[in-house]
Amino acid sequence: MQDLKTLIRDVPDFPKPGIIFKDITTLLKEPEALRRVVDALSERYRGGGIDQVLGIESRGFIFGPLIAYQLGCGFVPVRKPGKLPAETIAETYQLEYGTDRIEMHRDAVSAGQKVLIVDDLLATGGTARAAANLAARAGARIAGLAFVIELEFLKGREKLAGLDVFSLLRY
Ligand code: AMP
Image (cartoon, rainbow, N blue to C red; front, top):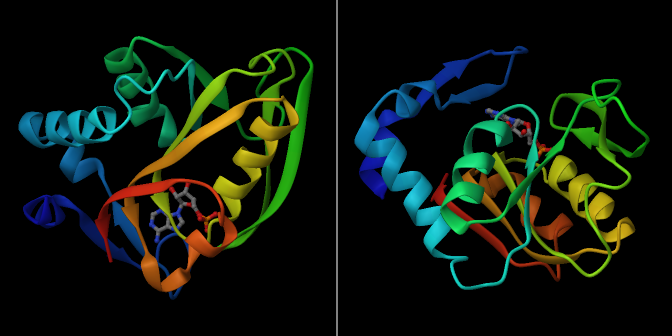
C-alpha cells in the first residue's frame, strides 16, 4: 500500500496558508490504484452485514458509492448545509480550517441498520465525529469508519474513541 502514497499529491497552502492538502485526484486517475484502494477498503467489511455506506461530501462521494457497490449495500449522502431536499438532521463541528455543518436526510437510515462511514481523509476527526453523531441519532449501529488517508499527527482517532477506525495510508 505504501507505493500508493507516491500517487497522492501534496499541495502546500491550499485551501489556506499552512495547510498541506492531500490531493487524491492524482491517485483516482490511475485505474489500478483506484481499484486497489476500493478493494482494500471493501474487503475489510465484506460479510460484515453492512446495510448502508454513509459517504461524507465531497470526497466521501467518490469512494463511498464504489465501496457500497462492492458490498452490495446502499449509499447515503451526508451533505453540506442546504443541499438535501427533504427533512434533515444536522451536526455542527470544528474543521481543521474553520467550522462547518453536515446534514443527512432524517429517513435515510433506519433504526438498527448497520452503517459504514466513509471519507477520503481523517484529519482532526471533527467531520467524522459529526457523521457518527448523525448515524447514532438515527439509531444506526456504526460498524466502522473507513478512510483512504489518515493524518495521524492530528489525532483524529481520539475524537472517535470507541469506534472502529480504519485507514489505508497513514502520515
Ligand atoms: P477533519 O474534520 O479535520 O477530520 O477534516 C476532514 C475533512 O476535511 C475531510 O473531508 C477531508 O477531505 C478534508 N481535509 C482536511 N484536511 C485535509 C488535508 N490536509 N488534505 C485534504 N483534505 C483535507
